[in-house]
Image (cartoon, rainbow, N blue to C red; front, side):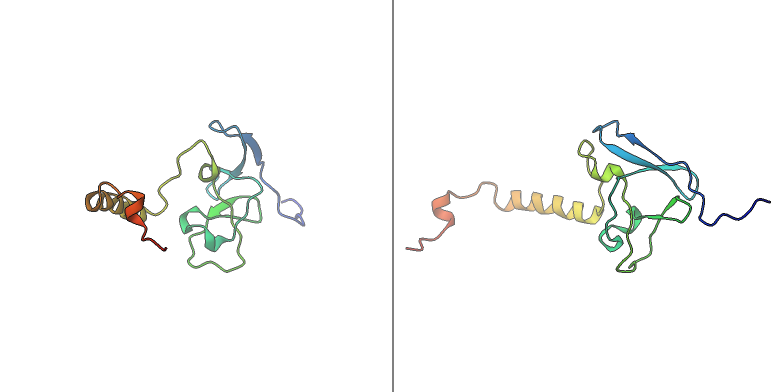
Length: 126
């Protein structure tokens, strides 16, 4: 057995360019020793990020998804670069909200297919 290290050994992480937008992204090992591409220099408060998208850094440099709800108010997390990538479509983070927005759009079309002229929209404030 070797001598104990005073600080945990870091895994070999790196940075690469996103193939979609060309911006840098951090390549970080997960708890399962897979890799995830995270947004560099970004650590939002965990409670502002949906539970399944919170990546928490461990002491050895790996990250894991942190699905505890609600997280501690001061807890910081990382997010995947694909969520911030301007060249990729934003994933459907809240499917029920996307469905509601779609239904509201269809209802608005059915209820009022053509908006009235501006002169009829606003009363004369004289």
